[in-house]
Image 1 (cartoon, helix red, strand yellow):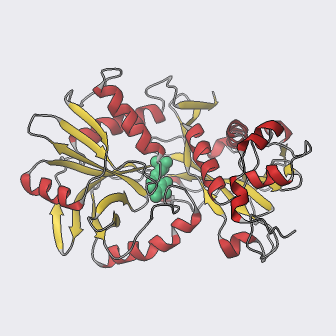
Image 2 (image 1 turned 30 degrees about the vertical axis):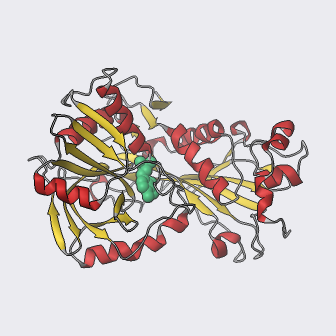
Image 3 (image 1 turned 60 degrees about the vertical axis):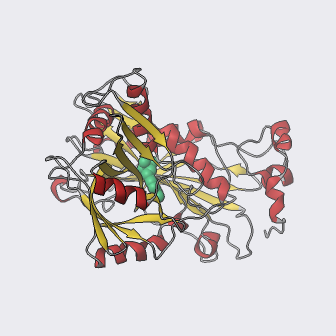
Length: 415
Ligand SMILES: *Cc1c(COP(=O)(O)O)cnc(C)c1O
């Protein structure tokens, strides 16, 4: 059915939603379909169909990121008139979607990325899945797709991992990458909030990002393209953010760099490293070391790794929980910084390090930034890391792999 609501209809008062208790639906659905028959996303309704053709397991040594998928996947349909449908865990395979589906035309499409780790005792855990669910819901709301109960999707993802449990690698540095995706599937090409949607989750075993120890990367400071703008979609994990970044990435490679560094505005503010959040470390004359990352001002993707790095560093600086190896004179800032500040600090010898953060690599050290025809050199230690990222990386990986356990960020999938 075609919907002809004006855009402002999204912004109806949340009072209506509260009265009806339909917090799981976009505001327009609450307003126009406010009846008690709309179903919530419920993990207990899951139906499981096991494969009778298990795939052969890929050899861990030649795992390519995101190439081999596990035996099963999760799908959950949604319809504006009935709400969330029955979650199904079933054999991995092609989806059947009409060519008119909104996702192919107007890109209502978003995704998440998180990992399940197996520790030495065989226990499988997820790292802060609640953060991914929160972000997934905020991405959904941004493209007028329905929101859902966070806990229900975490529970369903856990069930999927339990079904494909033997796909979680049993080897240090390896993990199971989980890719929840959500698309508008309404089979009609009118530009309107999709009246149908499909949420699915697929998983693939992945290896270490740096199999042979940390290898610092060289970045190209991109001034030719913009990643995000105020009021735009940069703060959301929407598919539409990534295809336009590929030309910038390709340009960086052609110029001899590994990745591009997204700069913003006339003063070339540092924003993100490819698809990772950016951090810089400065040494100040008073002996204080400052760990800085750009603030979440609407053009920065709120990374789970970013938040984790900030939390660990802040707890250390406050004396709440010490991170071994980190200086006590640490200051943690979410503040804007420009390429000029990076360049001047590098020249003055006060730039301590520069790195990217994200689920795939955790921390990716940077040793060089190409900027307006010059190379800015950034110090890295003999192991490729710097004095702040090294300690934080060890702490993060310790929590993720169960070496530091129990930890509130580790969510047990199975003992
Ligand atoms: C996913 C992503 C990140 C990192 O987020 P994590 O939750 O830490 O994996 C950073 N920047 C962009 C643009 C991203 O898409």
